[in-house]
Length: 430
Image (cartoon, rainbow, N blue to C red; front, top):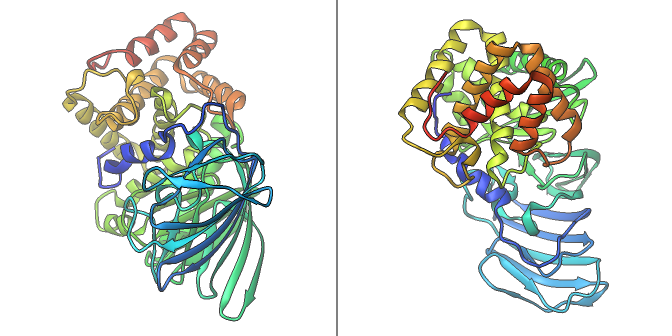
């Protein structure tokens, strides 16, 4: 894939998502959030009340521009202090039912994608707009979002109800499955196209892109979901796909069943050769994460998530846009891999490495393309389908587990081929 302004942010994304420092000594599990938020887009102010059960061990992370008004546990006040602009430490926490009231003005664009302004409210983990717990622990949530009535509101949850009062709209959402983020995206400029086909409800939100372009994209996404299901089995969240062209620049990200991309970048592609194909390719990569989020993202094993998402996106792009575009992608992968001066192996690349993109995305896709040629699509898909079926909803797959499954299904020669390539210090295609 040709490196673009979106891909340059990817190393930072990984670091922000999962490399938060640990706050306590014992393992923390957070099964439930209830978050009530009122947003004033004209001023950039948000007011939040969050209930967390059970409480974290000793600390959490919250954006430094947000003022904590009160922390209670079991109805009693909990002393707290900020050890840094974002790190909040609680003293004497004795009750599992934690309530945090906070508010503030988010006037700056955070990490290129998160902001509160009159045209767009987009809040996700990058802004640390809700209390972030140890290690990006999974949790379920309820979200009640209060915004001006002309804003269309979208989240990564299931809509339960909406109610208009005065000039405001209150929407209530619950998470589909345990996750590590709560996304709130809203704008008065968004339009929607939706359709239920093949038992999948697809929603696409956009602002400036041509409607015909969006309709074609809807059909391609529905087809892509069906193909991925054939390849790898049903996704972890079935029957829902929510795609947003957010009216800003910056990168894209996925939070099942939601994925968000830059509309400005999509618009810039319209006049380029293979522009529509590149836009689809990026969407297919994000959609593939509905299947490929099975390895820990804070370890070198994240090559499994990103490599399989990129390879899967390549497969759909090849099927939808033909051999010429597929060959172009392969040439770009090879050029970038050959130009890379890294001597870090794919399976040893850490999330903060400047080699993360070329190693985890491009070299790994070339590896899977070669494996498909050697062992056949159906045989390789058998390995991938088994891994997804066994580990969907977890992040437990390691390189060792992957190689073990390859050996079981494809034999020791195939396992040796993958291992040699994954641990090669200098990239050489065979």
